[in-house]
Amino acid sequence: MTAATLVQPSGELWKKIRVELNEDVNTRDRDLQHIKEWLRKQPHLPDEWDEGRIMTFLRGCSFSLEKCKRKLDMYFTMRAACPEFFSNRDISRPDLAALITKVQGAPLPGLTPNGRRVTICRGLDMNIDSNQINDVFKIALMIGDVRLKEEKEGVGGDIYVLDASVVTPAHLSRVSPSAVKKFLICVQEATPIKLKEVHVVNTSPIIEAMVNFVKPFLKDKIKKRIFIHSDINELTKYIPKEMIPEEYGGDGGSLDDINDAWRKKLEEYTAWFKSEESVKANEALRPGKPTNYDELFGIDGSFRQLTID
Image (cartoon, rainbow, N blue to C red; front, side):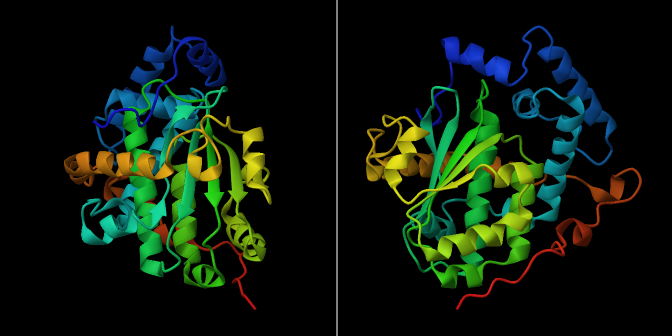
């Protein structure tokens, strides 16, 4: 696979992350075996799954076995419930190949001093329609699935930088609340991400409306971790300058090059993505009541349709 896209922690940082993840090297194999046996007993879930990804879930759940089970169940459930995100995941398809040049969202290769992975998301083209927004979510989840396999040692959490420079009122009118909710369920309930900070840069008057649009779908603790910056230089308070890409005034190399490396990596995973399409929950075999997708994805009663003057 493409080198240097996900540098892994080592030395003292590796030790620090073990503490943060509640990872005991003496008992983690026992926990891993417990989850593997649990999976075999669930008629609606895959009997076998690779140990590396299970360990990534255990780390993301701070080795809480019950939380890990809930997240794994939701992970496989969402793969069945959202074919628009989890099927036809071939980055060389013309529509996805064109889109990945318009929207960037790849993780930076290194880690912050406290072991956090940083991802910078930015649009390069204002002309994104509603169908393409679903594909943006698809690509983001493709990257997430690769990270499930390749984060061999675990990280101390994730930091996301959202560049709002090309966001317009028209974009918000094209976003389906249902699609946003589905995507955020995938991120918050079905993946082992420890989201530590979200930084919004290159703001405009529309950004407050955008944040308010998304907030009804966010957990309370996540809402408190969103920071909006009027000065992009404030990023250096949270992310070392040597990690920040040159497009944002840092010394971390070109963001274009980082995203191109990830495009190539996703191409290398094409056959694997195809083989993974059948790895999902089978609701017909779920003990008790099958998951009701309408209930799962119903828009919260507090949601208000966004209107832009």
